[in-house]
Amino acid sequence: MPSVIVIGGGPAGSSVAGLLALQGIDVVLLEREKFPRYHIGESLITGCMGVLDELGVRERVEELRFIRKYGGSLVWGKDGRWNFKFTEGKPEHPHAYNVRRADFDALLLARARELGARVYEEATVKEPLIDDGRVTGVRYALRGGPDQELHADLVLDASGQGRALGRHLTGIDWHEDLRNVAVWAYYQNGASLTGDETGNIFIEHVPGGWFWYIPLSDGTHSVGFVTPVAEAKAASIELPALFETKIAESTHVKKLLAEGFRVSGFRSARDWSYVCDRFTGPGWMLVGDAAGFVDPLFSTGVTLAMMAASAAAKAVPEILKNPDLEAAISERYEESYREFLSNIISFVRFFYDAGLDRAAYEEYAQALVDPKKLFFPRKDFVTLISGLNSLRPIFDLPVPAPTPV
Image (cartoon, rainbow, N blue to C red; front, side):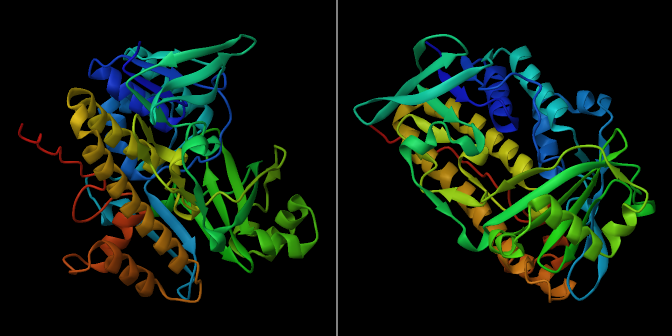
């Protein structure tokens, strides 16, 4: 019987499985699909860089020749076009990457295997196994095979928005004001940003929504449009037609794509901003998108998932060594996780008011993460949208002392 079951082989699942295996813990990872597989979420932020180092894969990521991303460029608010650099927040994190998720995720899953996790692909988790209120394992099936039971001391759900475990154990709170829909495609021969903006994600606000424009290492650009679901319905046209209409209404994305041509079909996703009612319980823990997902405006998804994985990989060994501390350690994990999610959600909601100036956005970020104003608002703004915190680690998990007998 393994000590830990991890559900899901994306960045959260592969990271936590690899980091636990690195500590000598017996881990089984169950992944529904066969890698490599396509996934959106291509623009990373610098909060994930420390986790790549923990996993020992920074050099391998470099070898994949992903585009280095040194910051972001925006057309938003009263200031028109502006940009930021990650070094304005945490100088030790100068860049992140724009990645092909199929390649990036496959690298992380391979690393989990290499570190000792037993990885089963095409393994669909059906339901948790529960004994006297405690999750003790899962029922799953390999493709084409019969249902099987697998037991463990702890089960971690890192299955993303499918919430393979969480949907049986906890409710979900949708952020009604962030019910958006995204439609995207890939373009060749689009113009790239230059100079200090080279590699940046480009975000342009347009009436009714906003565009992302992400350079990828093969010369293509990922281009997506995000709009409220209500706006999309009111438009009374199909999403691809809405996308093309909004391209024509844009100022900068239209120019960047003047010589570009679409080289893929359109994809779409909707209603993705949410948080679960609980992140932990007896025998189980949620990690990454399985716990919650914030609107994609600041590209926090992958990074926050990997940082949560790193935190879980610190908490789980202590729970295994000191079962009596499980509730206290799990509570601190959830508390820390919710605090950062709450800050990002609050900031995204504020930022969606595109009628403000840059100083207002920076001051609001400071109010969230640095209320004593120990740093400049600009630093707090960049630090927050880098997936970090100016004052302390987001996942600060001191281990409670055992209760004296």
